[in-house]
Image (tube, rainbow, N blue to C red; front, side, top):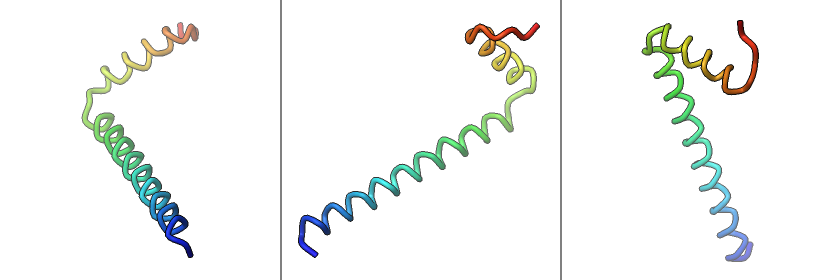
Length: 58
């Protein structure tokens, strides 16, 4: 392997790790926020989002 190939492989591995770490952090954050927020707050947020997307809900 040449030095350029080794560098490219190492860079891709670092980017892959960073992407996995970011996705895990965001996913755990969503689970944590949804798990500890009041049910009415989640309902109101979902309801408001449906209205912003022009989706009829009632």
